[in-house]
Image 1: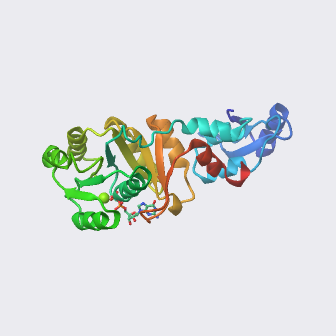
Image 2: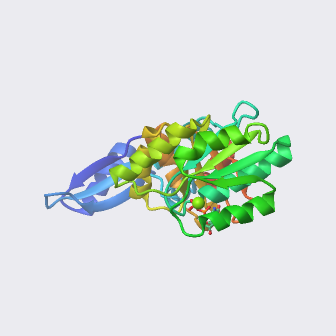
Image 3: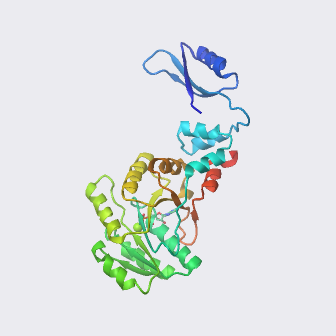
Length: 292
Ligand SMILES: Nc1nc2c(ncn2[C@@H]2O[C@H](COP(=O)(O)OP(=O)(O)O)[C@@H](O)[C@H]2O)c(=O)[nH]1
Ligand SMILES: [Mg+2]
């Protein structure tokens, strides 16, 4: 449903126009000074026929969902289904078809944590022997973090330069069923760092390439990362830190802008908890909150 702007010399007159066109139950979204004019502009939509649940629009806007999309969803006859359809497909770890999984994304996004959670899940669900290869030779303490994870999760672990990756994979061949590759956070504004990331992806050839984004990230920066992830050929988006934010509209916007499916959501620092498939219908109900 498209919102319409009504212009008049005064707010009172503009509201009268709204009422004449859309009836007395019209929903007023905004009253503002019309750009480059002395007129007042009132943005309104007609009251929906059938059941209009008044809490839906505020719930979606509180999540930072764009106004026109929030309106379209809130006014649809079945908002939860409409939102679920927008959230699209799911691409999860498909064991045993996926044997090489890689995570890429911004610094501190939760890549290592998400892979560790996935390793714990794969071990307990499929009993597979997991190897975690850390290509993060940049971050101080990355090796130590790897050693701790290996001990906690009973994994094979190695830190190596991308050039050494083929040798390592061969060495692990008989010992490991699933290889998870961790990458350093790179700066998407520096072309050479993006190229390094591309080279890492090419040298590992993951069957599942996860683009990891925290929902707490600035919207514009996240959308820029979305372009990088799409160009890298990511298979799916994985959103982290849902527990740290009440604004999850970024998930919806990134799915729409990148065209990538969702994979998992994480909502805890705990390695054994807080990893769940980003089931569209569950996520839709959470985005709509109590109003659904
Ligand atoms: N609250 C919360 N913290 C998280 C989550 N995922 C990761 N973290 C924390 O975010 C920080 C960075 O995580 P890390 O996996 O090292 O990020 P990386 O640099 O992308 O590998 C750590 O303190 C993690 O414990 C999450 O889902 N919820
Ligand atoms: Mg890391």
